[in-house]
Length: 113
Image (cartoon, rainbow, N blue to C red; front, top):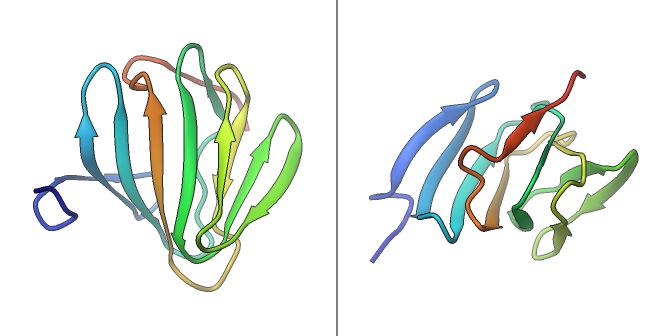
């Protein structure tokens, strides 16, 4: 059994949390939390495609220059090579799952802001 309580935890960006629920070469599933006003860096993945599913809050996804709002219990797929960046532009914590196939380990290309 795996949960936030026993998964590997790490801090990323500016006060954001991640819990690695599944972490192998074929797939990665991470539960993430972003406080209000936080964002990740613009990047893309050469091989991995990702699916972001919002557990609570409102996620703003900028992908290939277009911004989209994803609400609680909604998701969005990010194909490989798609430039993307996640924001929490709301006043509440944002929690979501990121499912990556294959894993994004060593597959992240960071771009200038």
